[in-house]
Length: 460
Image 1: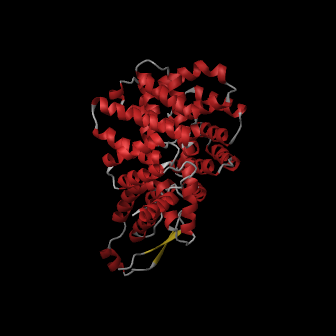
Image 2 (image 1 turned 90 degrees about the vertical axis):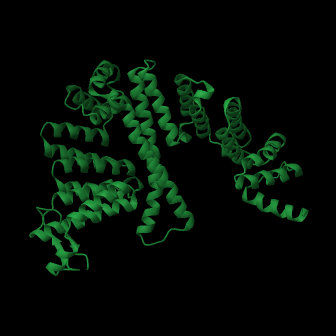
Image 3 (image 1 turned 180 degrees about the horizontal axis):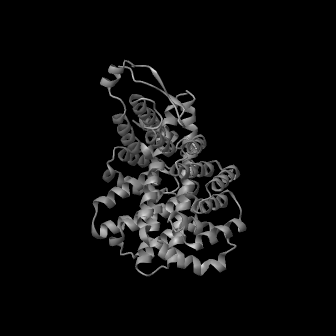
């Protein structure tokens, strides 16, 4: 029996990367017991041996803290009143102990944010105010911004700021600054996970199958990108009309003189005015000019282009957009910029030029499916203009559906939108009866005008 236990422990400790510096036979045995109970999700049975190891050998193995978190979360879920509060407080204590004994495996920002989120999720039981909760998240964010990455906690952090603003406890300036902080942080994380996902997509596109491990990583990256996409929409919804032109213009007018050479302030002010469609106010042009003078960059050239476009100088504007694209060196930002320029050109009906920028965006960031959907929409909008017969005009919808399908393949955030688009375009394309009547099953149709592509009629 002793031999079997020894073999079990040897296998377990290799898997859990155990340090044997503080070996203790009782702790080894009880760790094995609570770990097996935890794997079986029998958390109540795991609790007593786990507490014994935690108290006697706190540095013995990180499994004390990994399994302990699961055990205490189970206790919290199933407890009420004072017992529930006690377990919540103990989980907070456990994370502190993990940071003390396994600092390299306990990123400060991540675990401080987890603690704040736990308190927020149980704020009634803990009798916490929004101001106290916000202060908790704010300290975590500033202490270690790099590892404060959890999508839910980022949203909670901003949501609390909005609640404090609505209660008159925070001024508009703080609200808008925090919005920019969180949005920029989300963009950093999207850039990070997109870069990792792009490498795997490029490997697949090159004809090489992903390993099992790479497939797991791909699903992990996709899940985080989907979560960030969801909270981005929630953050904008939460901000809502609080950031309308009536609020932004007086605020930026008042602060302009003190910040007219401050590149960060100007960037945020210009971006906010632009995305909230406050560009008709003279202040927008004033801000853009100051921004371009203070820190000329790819970003400033883009916004100068928006002013020229607003003033009816389309060709000059497109020249500035091209300059902006050429100046940008960061791959992720360049892809985002290409997509923004493509959307402007698409709106202006310059489909051929727009497609060029959308394709640039896809080359630079293959995991963003939105450009595919934009190309598909332009094809569909051009169906009546780019075919020489009724059948060939409707054949353009096959091209559109094909582009939309690509979006679904590469971008987890666009699967639903892409599926709707594919269904819509396919319904508008010729049906089997019409293909049979024309006798063109399997034939290649050339689509003219700006599209300049071919499509194969489905075989029936």
